[in-house]
Every structure is written in structure tokens, then in C-alpha cells.
Length: 331
Ligand code: PBG
Image (cartoon, rainbow, N blue to C red; front, side, top):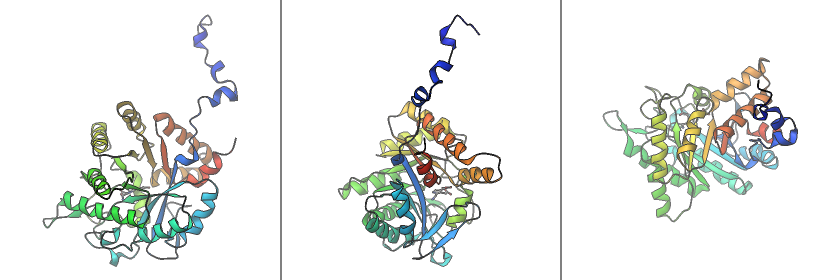
């Protein structure tokens, strides 16, 4: 320690609550997005062993669950539709939407829009919750993933969510070219609807609990052919560049805890707003570690949120939103 050098002393910079607040990365309540799961049944409330605190609701009783959260400051949700009856699934994921406009998402959108018009409604766009094979796209006759056919189905589904009242589309399928196709379809109809691209979505072990909730695990094979390999920063950056070029309004990184470097790199290279998705496995790990008394949940969740912001994240999708809305108001 060189006592003659004032620049070697850091404590003076943060030894008061006032100066500590100047470093704050506290997010605004309006930058928190809450994922919700709705099923094809009107009334349902199912809990999940692997994700305590998270429920699947019927498309009608979701409204009474959301109302108190909106009163607490909730401004936006990310909606996932779930088909619990396997016999209603088919190879092209018909109930995702398109010709059919009475899937769980359409039904829920109408209920929520009518009861909570100020809530901002983001729709996940994917086929895996609706396809009999559990993949995010459709296959050709030889059993190969049909990228063009998949994009067409995703556009049909996305447009049907807009008709039902969605404010933003968030395609999580990872097919090539879906951002451009969605944007073109929206512009053709003169709609200034934003698209949030799951650009840097990695093939991850953190999605386990979600696939249980959605019954959406692939029947055969895995998603390595379309989700990004977790060791590749290069592909993530190429995907972001491409999606911005295709007209993405927002870029997402998912999962987040093990991918903070990807956010920093995106922020360094591109002028764009980045959201992150703290996914189901990340939620469960924190939940169960806290339950076992190993960590303090509130402290650790706030520390994670701070790290997302420090890395450059602008908006945060997390299952901890109801708790965060309370914690962020505390002094
Ligand atoms: C795909 C999708 C997944 C998640 C969101 N959209 C799962 C997957 O790719 O298998 C995961 C979200 C989470 O784990 O919380 N439709």
C-alpha cells in the first residue's frame, strides 16, 4: 500500500449511502417482464414441484392472478400457451395459431386485454408447446427440419396473436430468417408492432423445469441443430447482427447467469436494447438453495439483477418479478 498515493484509496468513493447510490444498477419496475403460462382450460391453477411459486393458469383465471400484481407495479408480461391434452397436438402445431385462433394464447390475450388494458402483452412465438414431436419448427417428408415451412407457421401464429391483442412478438424458435419474415408481415399490414428476437438463445441445461410445465420436451433428438452451442460467442454475435439487420427491435440473451459476457460483448459491438431471460432452471436453483438455508434468496436475487444490469442488460425477464416489485421499493 502506497500511502502517498490518494488514488490507491477506494473507500472514500463509497463510504456513504449517498455516494454508494451513485453506482446503483437498480432497475425500474417498468423494465421487469414476468413470464406467465396459460392453458387451454378456462379455470386451472396447477403448481409445479420443480418450480414452486410458479403456476399454470386457465385463460380465464389468469386475470385475477395478474390484477394484484399490476396494482403492485407490474407493467409487462411474456405469455406462453400450454396444451395439456396431448391429443390436441399435431405435427404442425395447429393450436399455436394461424387458421385456428382459439388456442390458449388467443383466449388469454382477449381476457387480459379486456380486464387490464394498460398491461403490456408480449407473446412468445414458438411451436414446441403445440407440436406432437415437441420441436420448435416443422419437419419435411424426409424428417428434416423444414426452416422455410417453420418460419411460415411462426408468422401465421404471430399474426394471429396480434389480431387477438398482443403488443409485442418474441419468437423463441430459433429458425433462420424468422425476424425478417415477421417484420415484413407486420409492415405489410401497416403495423408498428415491435419484435424482440431471442437472438442469443443457447442450447442450455437450464430449461429443464420449463419443459415440464409446458410438456414441450422433444420426443426424439434435441435442439442442438437450431439453438446456439453454449461455447460460441461468435455465433451469438452473428445472430445479433443478422437479427438487427432483419429489423429486430430488441435483442435477448437467454439464459443469463452463465452468459453475462455475451451481453457485454453485444453492448460493446451494437447500439441496441438488450433484454435477458433468467430462465426456469436459474429460478429453481436459487429457490431450492434458499429453501435449504444455504443462501438468502432476496439478497442473491438482487445481486443477480445487479450483475445483469452491470453487464449491460436493459430489461429483465424473470420469474422473480412479483418479489422484485416489493424488494425494489424497500430502502
Ligand atoms: C421454447 C422456449 C423455451 C423456453 C422459452 N421458450 C424452452 C426451450 O427452448 O426448450 C425456456 C424458458 C425457461 O426455461 O424458463 N419455446
